[in-house]
Length: 339
Ligand code: KG4
Ligand code: ZN
Image (cartoon, rainbow, N blue to C red; front, side, top):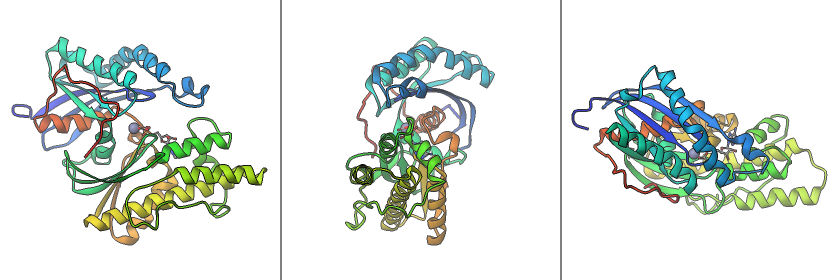
């Protein structure tokens, strides 16, 4: 934005079950520096219910938000008056949770008389692999999280074209549901990765859905059902083997479809982001196949794979520098899309 060569941006993320506040200092066309990135996870509160309960989530956001803002300012060594732009996730996510974070950020912007920028949570994930660069390069991005499995063609920051996505469950959701079937604690993703280390990925031949159709969409509900039937049929199984075989099926489809997408659009760079991308088996499989195919791979740092506000501040800063500022009367959108 004109006159804003450098800006200090405070962002709030509260779309689901993490309350997060981050402060970034960014230079237009230059690097960004994360001055603070605080996350308060609600996992323990939701674990007793086996999943996220929206009302519990929004109440928890409102309870810990002001403390997190203070903590972020203390970590950054700044007073709130030093913040030049405020931002928040506007969607997609749980309506009541989005409202808490966005209303708080708007209130701070209003009182301080500073600009407000609304951010798409998916754009936050999508750009998160490139937070240490001075610009977002053209690439194919895969977002794999608890709510989304999305393949995007990215020409640069703000220029997105949707290539494919899941027709039913997101990859992380499948991890969580299969984790539950296996009697593992919520969230199932990290637990499946942990127990799968002692399992045989070839023990069960689970389906690799929609691989033969040549398209770029995903489906994980058939795989989830196949695991359920196997558990019902076999009775006593080695949980480690089921976890490893399930994980292998998910990983194979994610890698194959992403490489197919890159070939289709002629991209020589792949970006990988979202909670599931913190899985070391996922990261290793992408690294190996991309190297074989001569494609560069940039994976989000593990600390920004799961929901966080640093990625929201980064996407917000790029929007701000591109001249995008939002009114305080802008609404949240629980079903917000990208591209
Ligand atoms: O990005 P994220 O924090 O939230 C959403 O925007 O959805 O992703 C959370 C998802 C959950 O489904 C969780 O089980 C999954 O990411 N996840 C993992 C791992 N760590 C988190 N899945 C597989 N392996 C992991 N290590
Ligand atoms: Zn997310």
